[in-house]
Length: 106
Image (tube, rainbow, N blue to C red):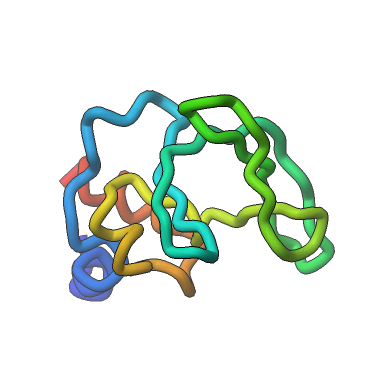
């Protein structure tokens, strides 16, 4: 692992993955600051070569209403632990899952 990757891991995903999350389940912080567990329900290609996701709340299955193109949520809004979600640690970085994989493989 390069020093750059180590720095990115330290900055974007400082806390370990929450092992209580199911596969495909994430934390999401709403505009009102409340944090919920959600799962991805659909995939939406966005006009800027990014991928958007439709999400549903884990506790009741209702659709999460997000702002933006096609009401999609991007990966920078989804987290694999509650503290990083609260801190919005990778709000500006979509590819954090690749960093988590690098960290796990190391």
